[in-house]
Image (tube, rainbow, N blue to C red):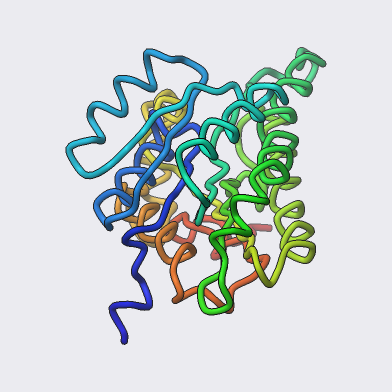
Length: 260
């Protein structure tokens, strides 16, 4: 019984923003665990390249989609529904960030980041709900995993105002969606700390060593860390976890100390 608690083999999973970074790490983890994975991203070429690399680990399909477009979200779900009778897991990972000094921070950065990081997960989950309901059963409900950030848990040391606000918002939206969709669909969130990706490359170059020193774990995140957490939240092992926001940051946000 125990190994089956963490099994996701045979499940159908959709990972938005699955062509790079954390999304790619999650997609590879599901494939290695035996799931059938669909990835999406704005760029068709990036989708094709990522699917080619990921296919070494299992059955993967790529469908281009800009999740900030309601029409493209609908097309994504329609394309998935034409190929699959149901969807077991939706990972809302696609997102955007922006950095600028406070006095120079543009209004457009709010529109772009909130659309990608807050509105899109809600819209896509709403559209995917019929497919998720079809996959759900009492012993193993369907799942939605929203990817937040520790920047939504603690004030970051960089000027990414719309990003940090959007991640705090997706954390609370996760709780609200969980209350609405349970028990047939369980909604939870992961709040990653620093992981190697295109989005974090400049930051890790500048302050990577400082982040390692500040982390009780003494390191930054690695692909198995995020993959294992997503698999846990997609398996029967997490059947009693609803509306949770799991910090995945080596203790950066949970053991923060104040110096007076």
